View 1 (tube, helix red, strand yellow):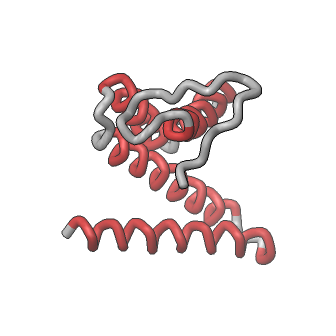
View 2 (cartoon, one colour):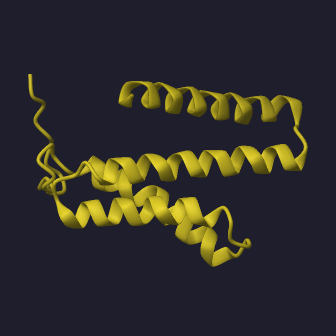
View 3 (tube, rainbow, N blue to C red):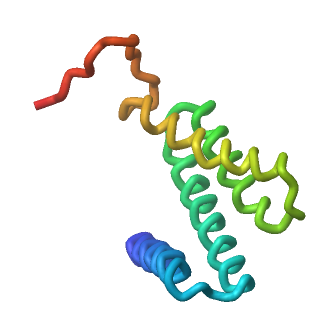
Length: 120
């Protein structure tokens, strides 16, 4: 069941991505573009919700789930510049957390100018 849901999620992501690329060339109607944007942000928010429950660190989990919930809810709020800025922060924050965390959920220490050692 979990594998089938993951495949459905991947198919939906590819459909939205294909729609966004086709929009560049075919110039879809504003309603279709709005539907693609809503689907895109809902899928990103859903992904953050699911990933948020898999983290061991409680603070990281709470941040991921909060960002995911905000991305789901922002689609149904009236447009405002503050909501758009919070939407960008909600997309970037989990990406930065995932980038600078190791597999155990603890942040890695990287000092400026220090090269990361690759595991070979």
